[in-house]
Image (cartoon, rainbow, N blue to C red; front, side, top):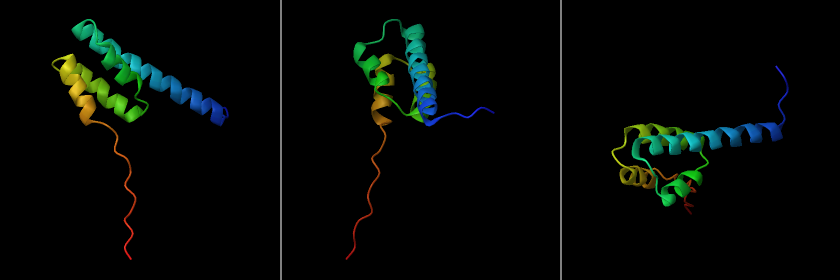
Length: 87
């Protein structure tokens, strides 16, 4: 197995994310025709591979681009909470 540098790993990850974004947009275009620019921008802003996988499944199942947009808004990543200090 060839050695993969950290730079190559980053490139591989970016390529996978780009492909996932394109797949989500392509499914929406196939199902609904033209996809609103705001929705495309929201998809292109996503960089979490797991979230993009969920978005692809939802793109296949959703009833409309508007419903898909609402799903994206509810599936935003949560910021990690810092433990509270107890003194």
